[in-house]
Image (cartoon, rainbow, N blue to C red; front, side, top):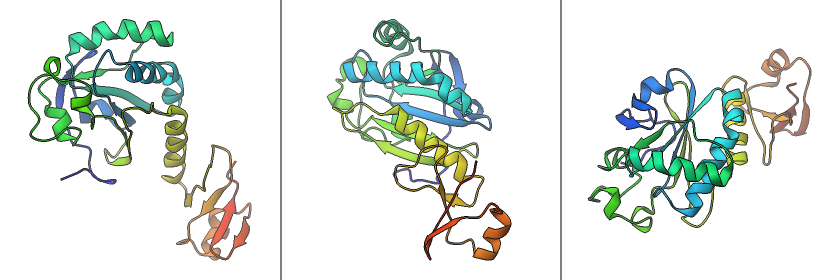
Length: 218
């Protein structure tokens, strides 16, 4: 069955460019960003993993551990890292999972369950479904699922924006409106009565509509 928001991210053991890991141990109470890509030494993926490397300090500030996966071997990942650094000007220091037997890709629904053959015999087009972003919370539950087409590079500023929202709404009784950015007003949840809101938000709020109350949290 396909993974859904709120599901526990499946655990696995795998070799990576930073050594062997067990995924749940790697998360270890942190947030995690698992990014899959179709194949090493392909143009869009090279720019994406480079963008992740450049923005790693921003993910670090938010307590988010990065990890990449494709069905290539660890040896291929290690060779590809130099190309990524040449293109992006930043070195990949987060783990990249080698999944040449397709086991993790199948576990996460990133490739057809009947797919076979190792990475060297497959093209990026064969792996077209392997372009998904998973944001996983400290409770190991999937908080965000984004799947991109082959031709469109991912926007990591947007992924950081969503993580900011997820981390805020995990601890406050709020949601975030369209185009929200960190520091903008949030929306008080409809499940919070005005009486309860007075205690939670003593600074007050703005009632745009009876069902839409906005509040500044800084």
